[in-house]
Length: 140
Image: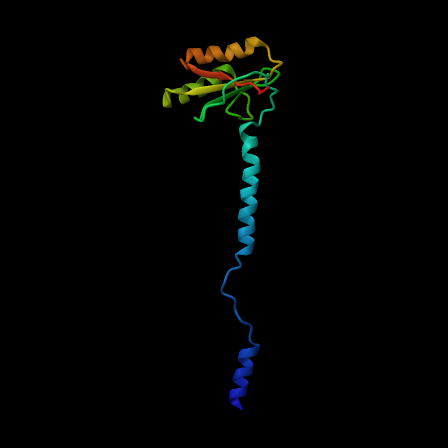
C-alpha cells in the first residue's frame, strides 16, 4: 500500500520545466533585424532633396562624406537631422580630412537651390584642400 501512495504523489506533483522556450527570442531577433533593414537606408538619405537630372559616373565604393543642401539652403553633414553652419561644416570636415587625406565629399543639392549656396560649400572644401568632390545628380 505505501508503494501506491508514493507513485500517486509523483504523478500529481507538478513537473518543472527547465528548458527555455526559444521561439519568442527568435521572433524578437527577426523583428529587430527587419526593423534595421528597413530604417538603415532612410538614415543615410534622410533629408529629402530633389536632385537635378544629369549624366554621371556611378558613386565610388569608398565611404565619402555627404553634404546635403535642401531647397532652403540649409546644410546637413552626413545625413544628420541637425542643420550645420559653414563654420561647423568646416570643423567637421577638417577632422575627417586629417584622418583620411584621400577623403571624398559628395554634395547633394536640391535643384531649386541658389548656385551661390553650393559655391559656399565648395569654398569650404577648397579651404580644407579637399580635392575629391562630386555633385550628386539623379539619373536620366
